[in-house]
Length: 126
Image (cartoon, rainbow, N blue to C red; front, side, top):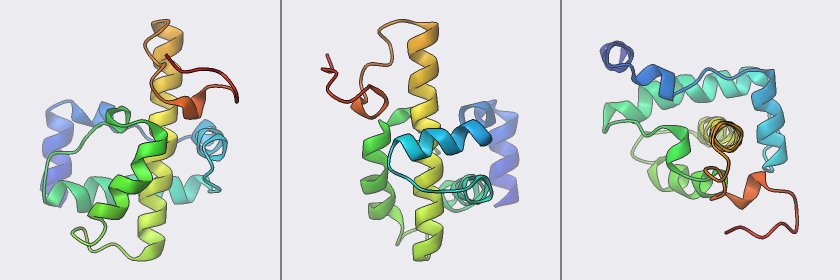
């Protein structure tokens, strides 16, 4: 597990799997995930260690925030996650995905329009 994390860092992939911050908690909550910063940190740690043991990790922006819960649910058995661990991974990925799309839309207008989760309620998604 540690070797996989080191390999990920050596390839520059660690930047694609961001460390959660206090702002991450806000992103999670805006997307229906009630969580804490320690839980998001645990979710990232589990994502790096458990999910990378079977396949290459996807950057959180790979899916829209609304799509991560289903993906994590499908993979939780393979990763041997408990219900609490599954929840932590889901919350981390939802928050990191929402942050990535929010950042994309600021840096590149129009780029972050895919996930309706980050748009204000009633805003059409193109």
